[in-house]
Image 1 (cartoon, one colour):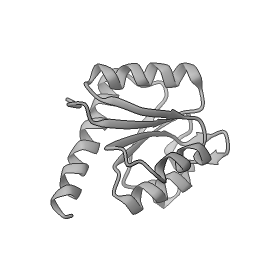
Image 2 (spheres, helix red, strand yellow):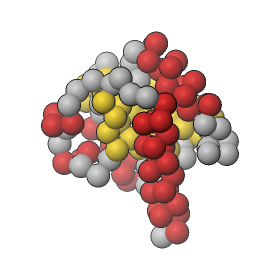
Image 3 (tube, helix red, strand yellow):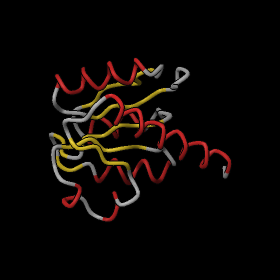
Image 4 (cartoon, one colour):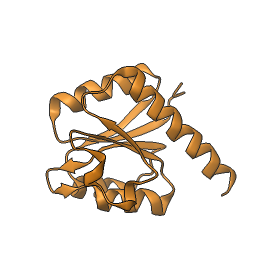
Length: 126
């Protein structure tokens, strides 16, 4: 499915990050990097543009709103994985796939497919 496209992973729990990275790679994607905080991820985004991203909502340095804004500015599709209910997120996340932890490989695959579909739609309009 991933054909080697890069996926940025932002998750502050090491075991969850490892599990999700394995799931992503099993789908043929390349993990562009694993980041634990908004600041680290935003620094990476200054010089890189991943094909898609998977972001935990609650990170070491706060909610992932700065990342959501950046992804929307750059047209980078992303989905959220979280132990928090979607109701804690503001309207910035209304049109974003949201996976409740724990989630299955199939659920992650569906979210990645939705991101790829969004990416294809965005690429046509560029």
